[in-house]
Every structure is written in C-alpha cells, then in structure tokens.
Image (cartoon, rainbow, N blue to C red; front, top):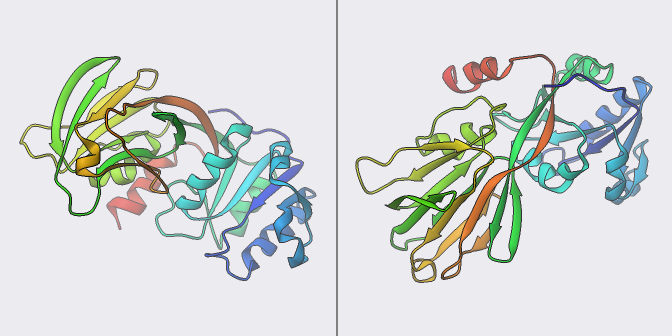
Length: 281
C-alpha cells in the first residue's frame, strides 16, 4: 500500500444506467471544481453542457485519478479499459454490495476528503488470460463453464505444466483475491485479503466428494483444458462481462498480471466491509 500523490486532474467515468440524468456526475464534477481540481470527461458527453474539460478517452492517462460512478461492475469494466494507465481508481457506489467501490453515493464528506488528499492506495493483482490467440485481463475472475443445458464438463487443471487434477463439474472459477468475495465465494471458495498475490481455483458444483479450492502463487501459470468443449459447449467468461467460446484442443493459460490501484479512505477497511456487507447482511 502506498501513500497519496498530489492531485490536479480527475477523470470522471459515469454510468448512464445508474445515473440516468447524470445528476450524480454533475455533483461529482462540481465538488472536484470546489476542491480546486480539473475534472475531465469523455468527449461523448459534450452535448450535456456539464462544466468539465472534454477529452478523448486516451487522454485519461494524463489524469491523476479516475473517479468511477457506478457499482462493482462499472469498476470491473473500467479496470480492463483503463487499468494500463497505472493511475488510481476511486469507486463511488451506485450499486448494491460495492466491494470494489469505496465511497457511497451520498457520502460527500468522504469524497471531499479524497479530493483533499486524505486517502491511501491499495494495489490489487489482476489476471492475464490467454485463450488461443485471444488475450484478456480480469480483476475478479476468469470462469470456464458449461452453456445452457449441456452436459457437465471434464476439466483438467495444471500448475506450471504439472497435472493437478481432472474434475467433472459445471465449470471452474479462477479468481484473484479481489474476486474471492464474488462468484468464487458462491462456488465455495475461500475469502482472501485482496492485497494477497495468489490465484484461487474453485470447481463449480463438482461431481465428487473431494474437490476443493486450490490456492497458488500469483506468478505461476494455471492451465485449463476442457475435454471436447465444442460438443459440450464450454465458454470462458471474463469478470462476468466478456465471453469467449472455447474451441477443441484450446488451452487456457492464466497467471497473475499487472496491478490496479484502488483508492481507500483508510487502512484495513476490507474486514469492516466484509462484516457489514456479507456477515451482517
């Protein structure tokens, strides 16, 4: 975890489905102005006449922070699109659970504290995923699963080219510690501190009594092979948002990738969030 940096330009990423009239976006940009900072907004919103500096998305890389208005899904999408800029993300929660977001929609005080430099940064490991000729990155997980009402899948798992097991199941979740509270948790996987650098492998509804999650170091390659995937209609889904149809003899290789920096208003808040959003829910 590293400390804050001096802020100047703040890029704002709205979610038009959750902030339909962009009232929340206008409020966030007004507060950025009040803090003496420069708000950047995608040029596609120029017709809204919001008081911001309109730029192309490629110029977001010149910002000091990205403010993402939405839920965890909006953060996941933004992480894949802008994560390579290596600038911190602040999530303002317009969704439900909000494990990735940090500031609640109506919490203006916390937002202002961040704008005034009262924050810390947490590095969260992402996944690099290679499937055939296609490459992806994931903040939460890469999921291999069967489609529709097809048969269960025979999935072989390898770590560093060494065969670990072959499991007959509905699929397998390959998750980051950040994604351990998402689909991986629902599939019976462990909860991990998001600052760890490990890969969590969890079968989905395995047809045996002994399949358990496996946790491996983030720098090691995890290889997944599906027997006759076209016959059984197997797919790869990235962060629940991008899909890839798995072909015959296609090897899927997953390893720890770059880190994305998430803005936090204090240290060790993950456990408080865990208690409030899962245990007391």
